[in-house]
Length: 122
Image (cartoon, rainbow, N blue to C red; front, side, top):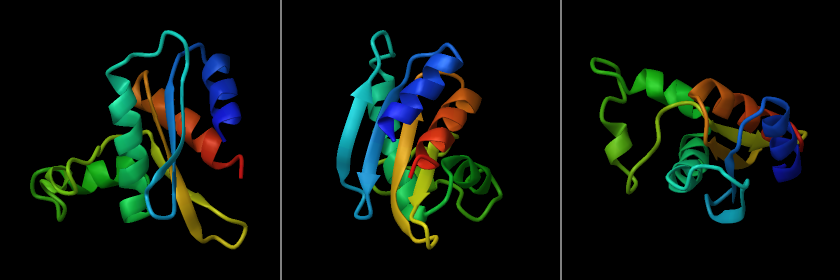
């Protein structure tokens, strides 16, 4: 997953922090590409955990957490969540969520593109 995410990141000319969590939201793999923002390290991990905690893309959680929406202020739970794109659940061949990937280091659109590529590597 990390190799595919790095490959996609290179293809779109960006540098990323890439975090993988297992089904229990435990960090099991991490890579920081040379030159990726240090501040995005923690964000990538939180994106992966957020995607696994709720089994949905973090961008969807972001939409649901806007003022007036049902998950408003959810980002303050669980020791801090990230509610913008770049976190994607990882599913097995049967559609069961087995973990998640979180990517940070560029625009949220690029973060999501790279995370999605990594998630589909399984």
